[in-house]
Amino acid sequence: MTQLALVIDLNTCVGCHACVTSCKEWNTSGEAGPMVDRNPYGADPTGTFFNRVQTFEVGEYPSTQTIHFPKSCLHCEDPPCVPVCPTGASYKRPEDGIVLVDYDKCIGCEYCSWACPYGAREIDEQQKVMKKCTLCVDRLYDESLPEAERKPVCVLSCPTSARIYGDIHDPESEASRAINAASGYQLMPEWGTQPANHYLPRRKVNIAVHEEDLQRVDNPLRKEDRGQRAPTTRTTLDDSTSW
Amino acid sequence: MKPAFSVIFLTTLIGAGQGLFLAYYSAEWLVMLNILQISAGGYIVHAAGISFLLMVGGLVASFFHLGHPERAWRAAAMWRTSWLSREVIALPLAMGTVLVFALIRYFEIDFQVLALGRVPLSLSTLIGFVAVLAIVALFACTAMIYASLKFLRQWHSPLTVLNFFLMGTASGFTLATLLAVATGAGPFGYFCGMAIFLTLAALLSRLFSLSRNRRLRSPSTLQSAIGVHHPTIRQIAQGAMGGSFNTRAFMHTYGAGVVRLARRFFLLAGFVLPLLLLVISDADTLVLCSIALLLQVLGLLTERWYFFIEAEHPQNVYYQMIS
Image (cartoon, rainbow over all chains, first blue to last red; front, side, top):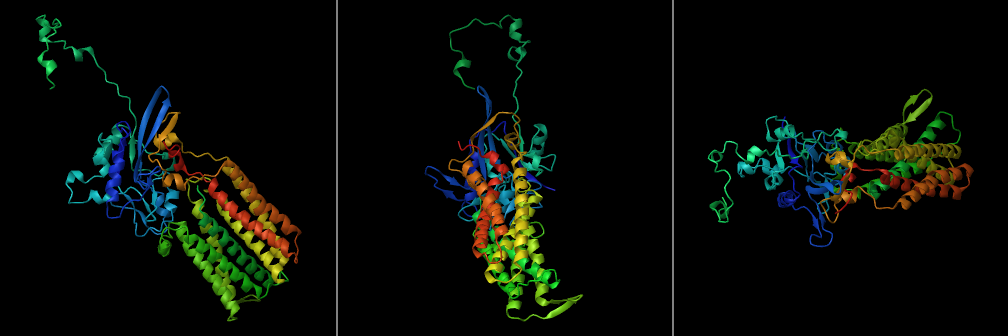
């Protein structure tokens, strides 16, 4: 069974909000109609977003790290928001595991948002229906798009490739490999919702630089005792050219 | 959680309506079984009518909670999984059977269907029995809407179901007591005694849930929420400057003083004062019973408000600082 999901690399995310703006742009222009924006140019802009980037500071000054944390619907494998919906507007697609809301059936009772521990659902205050990340389901199967673009728009827009999209039930997919290689984890595992989206943790990056890497041991110039050239004030070709 | 006023009125009003019908219908059975001597006679029609109107009031209030009330009929679809859907079925069923019961009695089109030993059972009595089943089911469905949400730990308890049942029936029996005094007919002693018993039971059950909720700690922390296992994490941006649905729907903005005052008020007005007034009232103290009912209704509305204030939603750990 397929379970499409996002894998978000917190080690790579720089918090640029490109995924937020491209998500809003794609989904507000879609068939379902615009996503509300109240007071967009005023002091307190607010509206419906499917994806937001939050920022956390970990540690105590001066040894702190800034963590940018993109947050959207996690498309849980056992989604608590689905069984509580009285109309069946919220559903999980059996074929690819995407959790969706049928905006024509939703009565706007907000009960699903109470049942989601992640706060992934937001009511659209204009259309009065519950909205959430669709994993860009309207891109994934659109054959009018080039095959490389049949991905969630947040994945395509990420400049640091911090977002990986794929089937986490297929062990050979890029997403599964990333989860396995970098010990990807789920959010709030204590609730047993089994989120499909995974996050890759921050990793310490240590590059071991050995002297031999900088100075070739078997440098033929050294054998001829020409390795150490006297410093010259003349500009060499290497200095004036950027390769 | 932010208190949802339409839901507060819905649950309080239908609870009183359900309790009122249970009071009069149970009294009628006790008379039939020769346990009670005084019958409410034809006034059971009035009681059923008021019970129906209270449930209509609750239903009307509930529509204000919906973004698309014109689609409310769809809400009966998922009764296999959703307690809200089950409530949407149980409420019209309870209303319908109570209304049919009242109409049969009012137009006197009743007839005997069968006999239980020496007790003759009329059509309306049988329909009333169905109404009782629907009313009990409605209590369970209404409370389970909240009790089934395992992330809202303050609600996720059998005490929620018990509280909804006890508070609904307590206010229903207090209303029955007032009706018995106002009409001058009906088993005042039974209604008043039961109102005292149920109010006391509701008070104890609510105090128990208050002390349970005080000791609860959410298993979700900022560490598990973002998966970073460091003791010191500080939010510096939540991804929205002017707030969002997440900051508006799941948090209340009342100060600790208001919340404390509300708790004291509902414990006094909803339970303690009506108890005292009911204990000293008798069959001709209309004013005392009226005050008891008024206080209890105000108290129970405040209690339901507090019920929302009490619940801590785990998503709030993601929204601790705007920027």
